[in-house]
Each structure stands twice: as C-alpha cells, then as structure tokens.
Image 1 (cartoon, rainbow, N blue to C red):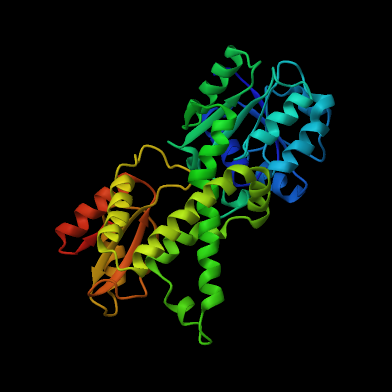
Image 2: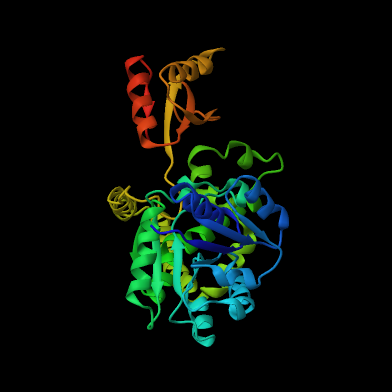
Length: 365
C-alpha cells in the first residue's frame, strides 16, 4: 500500500485500535489526531502512534487521504460539519459508528456522498478509552462498510484493501440493513444485559446475596454492561425504531416462555432451550463479532495452597502466555476451579494439551 496520511477525530477504544493497526501494518503512514482531551493524543504521540497531535479541527486535515470520525454517533455529525471547510476532494471520509442512518443523512445534507463510506468494525470490549486500544482488536473481525448512491468503486475498493491490511474482514452492506442487523446482534443484547444487571440490583437482598454469588454465567452474559453509558444512550436514540421493534419481538418471546413455565409445559420449555442451543452452536468463530472472542478454559484443581501457582508455572515452563487467571468463586464444578484466559487460539490449544497430559480436568464451556 502506498504512503498515506490518516486523520482521526476522536481516539477512543476503536479509533485508537484502528490507528495502532495502521501504524503496525504500514509504519510509514502518517497519522494526525484531534480529541477534546489533549492528554489522549499526547499519549498516542508519545507511543509513536500519532505523528501530529492537533488542538482543533482545522487546515491540517486537508492533507489526509482518509479521515476517521471516531466520536459517539451524534458527535460525529457535529464534527463532520466542523470539518467541512477542510475536506480535500480526494479524501475519503468515514466513521466507526454502530448506527449508520444518521451519518448517511448528514452526509447527504452536506453533499459529501461521493467521498463518504461508512465504516463499522465489529469488534470491541467492555472496556473503553484509548488506553485499552490495541491493534489486535481488529484481527479477523468483520469490518462493515456502507456506501452511498454516489460512492466511486475505486474509492470503495481502496478502503476494502485498507481494511484487509489492518487484519479485518471487509463486508459491504446497505446502511439501512446494517442498522437493523446491529440492532439485533449488538444493540438489543446491550439493553438486555443492562436490564439483567438492574434486575439483580433492584431485587437483591439486604445482605447483597445476589451480588455476592453472581459469578460464571451471569458475569459472562452481562459483562457488556460495563460499556460506555453515553455511547449507548446515543445508539438507542439514533437507532430507536429498529431497537424498539426487536425489543417488542423479544418481549413477546419472553411472555411465551413465561407462560410455558407457568403451565409447566415441558415440551415447549425443552424446545425453547434446544432451538437456542442448536442455533447458537451453528455460529461461526471466524470473526470476533461485536464482542471479542474469548479464549478461555476452566481447570479443576484441589483447593489447597500452591495449586494455582503450579498450574501457572506449568504453562509458563511451556512458553504459554496467560492473559488472565483467577479462581471461580462458586461450586458449579466438584472441585476448586481456575478460569484461565489466553491471548489467542494457539495458546488455548497448547494449554489444553499440556494440562490434560498432566492429569488436569479441563472444561471449555
């Protein structure tokens, strides 16, 4: 790929990860960035990710081949208006928002349809901010592109190549279809996750028993509730029709299963869980999806001093890098249980092999 100049307005988790991935794969690239929090771009400059930290949206952006709008959804619209006087005709404007209709309407209003291609990396974690960004966040994640009616095919193909260069998987989707799809697989699940957390909070006992024993599965299905409330507020208001429609369908499904439970309809309850299991098992692991794939196993150990250290030492002696390790504080399993996370699938597979040969019982679910 030829030498390019990239501009970023906003540099949080996703914007920072894109900038890192560009710099990691094309180190000769020039990156400039502006964010209202100057300390963020200064940190990126100190790390060698940003070459030119900026104090404002201005003339510097005219030299960019690509400009990434990386603020919350509605703020991207405002920033695009501020950027308008400084956009060169050759520059491709893009964003990273998980709602596309709003920005496409603003692009049309500003007569930028020939230069704009929407972007949405389907990657992320529950942690936010530039400090948590990393180039590997985008690896093998779907990166959705949404073109306009006037998008030039050469401009689109160049962007597709950029996405491949940073390790992601490009997928071109109409923006209206994108908003419906992300409502179903990302936005509504976030609403449900938050509602489950609030359900436990609102129904906890005085001694906080529910919070104390909330572990394993509950934490797994609600960890996305730690994402930015400001971001999710804007997502819900800008994609409200799709989210509301799908929530209505979900509420109907909950009412159906509630009735089956009330009536002890065992066939219907069994079918409910069986159909969900079968469909879930059909999902591909090719991409990380909206939530990054976790490479994790659980290991049974005797609940005695030193056993955790023995497992960690065994993995270390075999050059297996552990991302995270901790004790599962419940008794879903017969003995003491460690939860171990790895950085990649290769580390996971090697750890399973080593631990199994050493006599440990491994769980992958």
